[in-house]
Image (cartoon, rainbow, N blue to C red; front, side):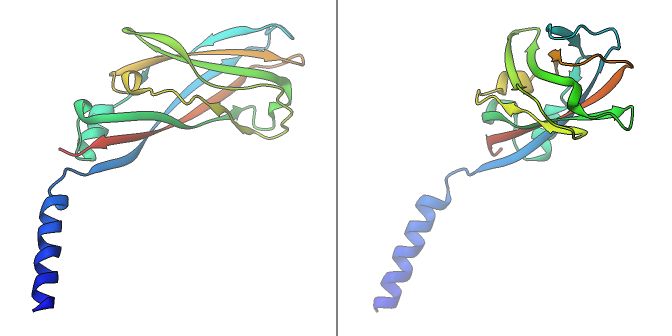
Length: 173
């Protein structure tokens, strides 16, 4: 008798809590490339544009059984810079870097940055913003603007790839 009562309570509990729509968490990754030219000034900030980054977010939302109107929050999980050319170059030339994000309908905000860089590695991870980036990532594309300060003479152009990873929290369809 007690077993039947316990099963009935468990079933009722499941019905009332199991019917709520659950959420989903997933990542969206993008890449962008930019170049530090050999004629770059030392100890002065200068800017580099990147081509618009196509998000494919609607396809990513669909793949994860959600939609743009069900997005609860999108935050930058990681932004890593890697030197792609020349192969032997390290980030020892770089003093600081700031990367900003914007869209045609959203103002520019700081996405990630790193100061006092003392790395002799070919890749670095930037400090990410804690802001909700939903409006930027839900757009069909976004723009990145990179501001850097070098601490040594750049004798040849340096190609850099930005690997960007966003963490998405959303409701299910």
